[in-house]
Image 1 (cartoon, helix red, strand yellow):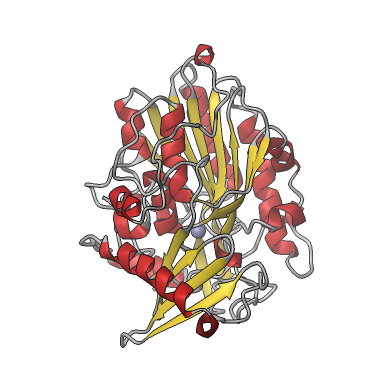
Image 2 (cartoon, helix red, strand yellow; image 1 turned 180 degrees about the vertical axis):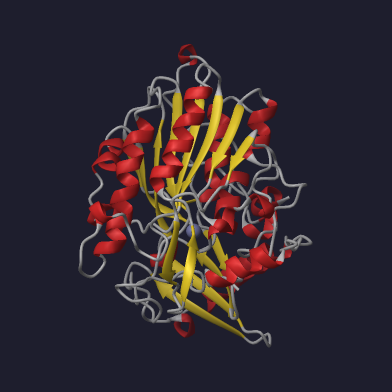
Length: 417
Ligand SMILES: [Zn+2]
């Protein structure tokens, strides 16, 4: 549906996956496994600021994407886009905790399971609990959060709460156990690390005092565990995707501080621009600065694995890129919808009363998104608003999650409700 919609813009003259992002894949390498690692809350630029030797090493053998934009600054909608290849308006999950992925959605895990893959997910934060529907297609969906990861901490409102997350050490242990148990099988493993999400309380070894140090410590802690996870992987027959679900704001636009970040309510680049690294056996390392979205990962992976790409995806593939990508947040009012090209970003803000306001930023002249120049470029605003309107036109009937009292209390503690 959305593919037809995009084509109607006349933007994608060719809607084929003629080139795989893993173009050097050789048929004689045999069936490929797939490992997707989703790091929570990792800003693109902070990978260079934190101590990440394992990721640095991984970069040297991967395609490094420098313009990957998350479809939402929220964990559940963004990870659903990662695993469905669809924008939130299409898959219907618009926020954490109050939506569930519809059983009618088709996930990457479901497609690969049908192809005979063993499928498993190890997730580490309550927003990805199985009750929200992301377990579809996984033989095993491990979402035990409290083991080794229950901490007393302060949420972003300053309230002391219990943090429902699993530490990277435990996440890795579970993932490695699964890998060893299923060695020799063709598999798809999805691993989600939650540690860089606030609060920033890495294990002692990774702590340091100072602005941003605890956040970087969380990233370094995940990096250390990535090293252990990657040691278990046969690099000759496994595709590996390393990505983050969204970034983090540290006061750039009035939310968060350099000690306590924030995300979920703004569509500025610090919350949306994320690292994306893709490794494939036989593919030469490369850099790619095309504008891509998390929705492009599913079609590229399926293409490379020789699977049919469903026509219902919004993603076009990582080698193709987009003239524009979309993002949204419906976490709180005002709801916001963003359209980003390499040069421009438009944000449409809609208040609870329905009042609208448009913000336009020239990302080349104003990369920090400080000066709203909407009044100077009415034609661009009109064109972009038309595309957002079309995007909103694909909204399907959303399914609210049925949340029990305990789940609601957890989400409130985390600041999501
Ligand atoms: Zn997240």
